[in-house]
Length: 310
Ligand code: CP
Image (tube, rainbow, N blue to C red; front, side):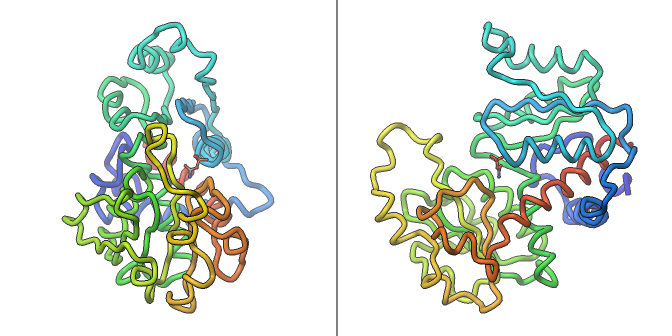
């Protein structure tokens, strides 16, 4: 398995081959099973140290990396950034060089700026760098867990129509999914108001829509995105949330034009009754939101295993 994943770091989906993505998805299957077994822990990464360094808030990603590492027997250190020496003027590079000097095995990093994992990776002597989300650039493990969840409901990604809707412009999740899904043969659609459009994705063959009804027609998968207010200047988003929900929020009526067996996804955190109707987020007929969160642990176990057990 290790030879099918030759990378030392996981920086983005863009540079992975379809075969490398598939090797992660295949390995995650056994970890999804293991995570539902009464005995969840194995010793595969005994003696390894994983450090979580998150400069942005996180519920799912940080916790699931910690659970994943612990289920594989590794030790985990969470750095509370608000109490770290970055508050005393230490540069990011000095922070990560000092962590690396402690002979850690993995540095899981989230940052508001695009390109930070790629910037720090070449400086690491000891640690594999794993991107847990960098600005608007990529969130590779999110796209992997999304694909893994889709494959639990659909036979193949090949030919699958996946509509990604909402704040595409500020979304690292949309970017990572666009790369992954097109590499594996899915048909990706972006549905967004003009102020959230991402025009530079036409090279991946992505269809773009401004009208929910058109973009959702016959979709197999609908993935909703939160409005990323934290990536916009104050006052930049000038639409009322009620009006936004009316035009771009997913509800049962809009979803009716999709395939009857459509699944509804969202990376979380969700803003109920903004990008998604609260009732739909909780509707077990369509919603796989909590299954995505569960599969995030299996995917992160597979990624840690592939990177650290070489
Ligand atoms: N999907 C996701 O990245 O969620 P968190 O911000 O809670 O990690």
